[in-house]
Structure formats: C-alpha cells, structure tokens
Amino acid sequence: MNTAPASASASATGLPSVLPSAPVEYPCLPISSYNCSNLTCDEQDNDTNKLKPPTYKWRLVIAYDGTRFSGWQYQQSTPTVQCIVGEALTRITKLERKDLLLVGASRTDAGVHAWGQVAHFITPFNYDSLEGVHKALNGLLPSDIRVREISSVVPEFHARFSVKSKIYHYKIYNDTIMDPFHQRYAYHSIYKLNVAAMREAARHFVGKHDFSAFANTSRNDRVPNPVKKIFHFNVNEMGPLVQLEVEGSGFLYRQVRNMVALLLQVGREAVPPDIVPRILGSRDRKELAEYALSVPPHGLCLLVVKYNEEHLGLPPGGPATSFGRHHSISKCKLPCF
Picture 1 (cartoon, rainbow, N blue to C red):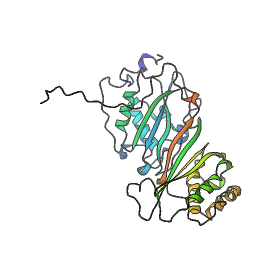
Picture 2 (cartoon, rainbow, N blue to C red):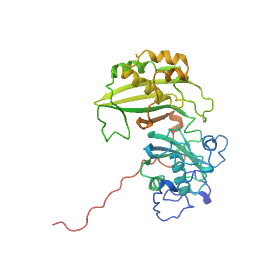
Picture 3 (cartoon, rainbow, N blue to C red):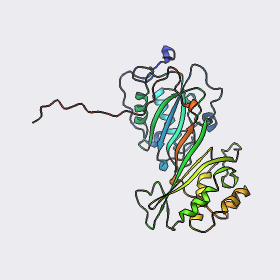
Picture 4 (cartoon, rainbow, N blue to C red):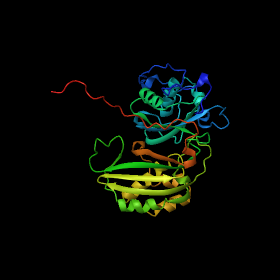
C-alpha cells in the first residue's frame, strides 16, 4: 500500500497519526460554534495546480436537511453545510481549511435539501481504513448532516468539474390540507393540478436549450454557459404527492425552481403547455416573470450527482470505500431460564 511519509501516515484505526491512537469520541458541535470567516468560494472551488505531491484525494457523499442552513457554499456570517463539514474535517485531520480544499458538486441554495451531494477534500497523508474517519466525522456533524459514503479517488477527480449530470427532485403536496409529515420537504399547492398537462409541458424542456430565461442573476456566477442539456424531466403522481424529477448536464442559478414554477402554472391551467418553448426561445428572464414566480426552496432536493466511471475508480494503494458500519451486540452469556 502506498502511504505518506511516516510523519504523516495513518494509524491502524484509520485516523492519521497526528491524532491520539486511542479511540476518540467527537462530540457534536452546536451550529453557533462554527466560524466561517476569512473564507472565499474561489479558494475552495478551484484546486487546480494546488496539489503538491504527495497528496491524497477523498470523495464524500453527503445527505442533509437544508432547513437550518444558508445553502452549501461558505458564507461569512451564517452557517452553511460546507462550513460545518469543513470544520469537522479540520478537527479530524488537524489540517487548515485552506489546505483541505473542500469542494462541493452543487452550490445548493438556502433551504434546499440533498441526498447525494458530492464533495472532495485532500490530505498529505493516506489512510489504511476509512471506517474510523467516517464514524468520527458523523460524530462531529449535527444530526441533519450525514456523510453517507467516503472513498479514495484518483487525482483527476473533481467534485464540481468532473460532473456528468445531476438529478434533482421537487415535491409538491397537492391537497386541500397539508400533511405535517411532508411540510418540510414538499411545497403545498391547494390548487388541483392537471398532472397530464404538466407532463406535456415538461417534455419541452428535454434536449439542449439556452436556459437564460429560467436563470436568476447571481453575483457568484462566472459568466456561465446558458446552454444546458436536459436528459429527462418526469412528473410522477403518487396520491396527493406530485414529484418532479429532472436530470441535466448542469443547471443555472435557480433554474430548476423556475422550471417547476412554470410547470405549476401549467398544472393550474393558468397557461398552456406550449408556453415552454416560447419562453425558452425568448432567452429573457422577464418573459418568464410575466407568467410565474419562483417556488420556495424546501421542496427541492439534490438526489444524485453522476460521474464517468474512470473518475470513480479506487487508486492503487487506496483503502476500501466506507459506507458506515453496523453495530452488533454479543450474545448474552447469562444462563437462560
């Protein structure tokens, strides 16, 4: 197995040697204890030419309830998922955040959830096993953020720039009375929706289009290419729950929520399904604003981020992927009566 020099190698427990060798319990920190000051997204998102050998790259698959957080991306004054995960990693690895170069695949907005957010970070040392790191990381994180998977990846992998496609879900609860068990994860529509018309309208989004009319302006945008490819856009009805699933090569700022907003207007029969190609062709955000307002974030969830298989292979000498470990109870040795 390839390892870093002895001064930066990992112990048999899966934690680097700079940490105590005895088992350590990491107490979960309150949200208010995290400090995201002195961070910029540019520092975190671009690790090109910053990797100095020997370095090791690690992929995280993260699920979170976005209700309490101001999105994924670092911000100066409010807690974000990237800030909290980064802080936990600094405690475990004993590295500075600027050295970890934690990068996420998607900059989800405040209130948006994720089941399959992907991120990567780097270390100057290798690990023999990832189970200990996995357990320690989830032990530090609040209960509404969970790392589902940790794996070693090749140096060419980049959580953001290697993305092949992303899948989002948007859930709508379509009934007169909102189910309290869905209120944090679904938008409540009291209007009876014409799901067949929504399906017809959604088909117009499929293919390669200029989505300028469906993008909000963001000061963080780096002149993104407005041409994106939508692979599928399904509208599924499951009792009162209407679930919209869209897969695309990428999405502009608030593009998914703006597409959903127009489909809701189609479902309410306020506008016809063939309005979609007309607004797409306008390439003008003001054109969409005449017919639909954006929907709230809590119905949106980043479900899956897809990559090419060659980017996901384990590098030589890397530890096995950790999916977490079940606990077991030894059989009772007391006599049974």
